[in-house]
Amino acid sequence: MSTYSLEHKKYIKKLRREKIIVTFFRFLIIVIFLVGWELLAQWKITNTFLSSSPSRVISTTIGLIRDGSLFHHIGITLYEVGISFMIATLIGILVASILWRMPILARILDPYLTILNSLPKVALGPLIIIWVGASMNSIIFMSLLISAFITIINIYNGFLATDQSYITLLRSFHATKWQIFKKVIFPSNYTTIINALKINISMNLIGVIMGELLVSKSGLGYLIMYGSQVFNIDLVITGVVILGIISYLMYFIVDKLEVFVANKRS
Amino acid sequence: MKNKLLHIKNLSKTYHSKKTEVEAIKDINLDIYDKEFISIVGPSGCGKSTILSILSGLEEKSNGTFSFQKDVTIGYMLQNDSLFFWRNILDNCLIGLEVTGQLTEESKAYVISLLKTYGLGDFMEQYPSSLSGGMRQRVALIRTLALKPDILLLDEPMSALDYQSRLAISDDIYNIIKKEGKTAIMVTHDIAEAISMSDRIVVLSKRPSVVKKIYDIHLTNKSTPIHNRKCKEFSEYYDKIWRDLDVHL
Ligand SMILES: Nc1ncnc2c1ncn2[C@@H]1O[C@H](COP(=O)(O)OP(=O)(O)OP(=O)(O)O)[C@@H](O)[C@H]1O
Ligand SMILES: [Mg+2]
Image (cartoon, rainbow over all chains, first blue to last red; front, top):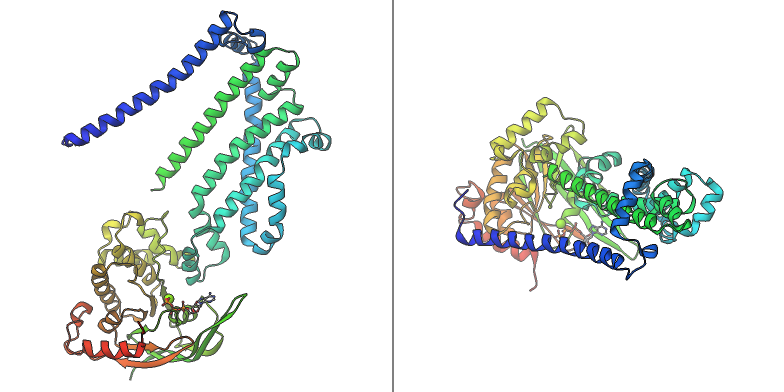
């Protein structure tokens, strides 16, 4: 192992140097941003009443943690995202499978799926509130509307793009449609499905926050909305920052999950 | 004396598509006997694959008949190896048994013994991406043999390989088929390959194709395909079949 050539060592060194540079500048950007923001506020160049400051965001966060409401709101939002993610995933895989099994049905529904997918779902917000009521249900419904169609379409297109020769092979063994689905269509599309779920989860977060902005009494969207109603900009910005952190963490987890699944399969 | 396994009479097939219809094969007559190695050659697009697809049940015939001797089973080795990238080599070879509900400890042991006999014992747990083209072809053959078919249908089994591996693999495949005592119908566009491997060669005409000629191949000192290429009758057959195919350059 230790007998790498000089060239290889140089190459490794170069890789390491690049990684250090990238990490350094990543931190530099956030530090400059935070310090600049703080200083501008301290020097009264900006109005903290309108643009807050990092220290005020931190103290607001601590306040929210103290009275226990922070984790309550995060919990509610994550719960709503989780529920709608599971339902949307289930619907996506199920409907995509049915469409694959019944090509005629797929052809009939094709224009409707396209319309429903491209329609900006926010426009339906007021209708949803009237139909479903101002409750958590309408938030989940909103989130589902936003994520389900794109999930169906992505998974279904993956199914359609399955290598035809795999299917011919199974047909040469006189396989049933169900066997073809179970042994080829589904397993050959793991990557497609994981990718669809990756898009799905960010869609769910968007949908949930949109729903919370419209109707709710708790959740991060509510926190932001409430902050703006009482003109507490500290609260609004704290809400946005926490939302940013959460969406990054969610992306991070899904990404790691993908690598984990990919490793297990090769 | 000879045991007839398959009888094909006036077989024809017309493909229909929205714009047009294509008469692929018109009038195919052929008998296949036990333990024979038959090659089908013909101009490209003349319907060679179509014949195999019909025999294997992948396509419906349009007219004519074909009948197998009773209890004769067939295995189809497609042109493309189609190994599943998400399954290891052993599991790839078991897919046919799984689908046909014949997977037992016994049939699995048989597949493992095939893999071991044909030099793939150390690769059973590996995934297809780590195998060479020739090895993949052998895996595809074993996947077909797993179901213990009496007749093997081979559609250009070596066409995806480079020349060197083709020669080596045609020896391998030939030996496996002979050793397992199978009957084989192989489609190829390589005349030399056909002569070196076959007992009989069926030459098809241009589309819509009929059987133009059937050659019984008699080689002095016949042994394995690579050696057969050196037999003195080889070039004579080659010239005749070349002329039959009537390739205009
Ligand atoms: N599913 C199909 N639908 C319509 N036409 C088809 C279909 N399959 C094959 N054909 C046509 O039938 C003819 C014979 O096809 P086939 O694949 O059997 O020929 P082949 O001799 O195997 O050709 P190649 O040498 O290219 O492998 C071709 O003209 C082809 O275009
Ligand atoms: Mg062909």
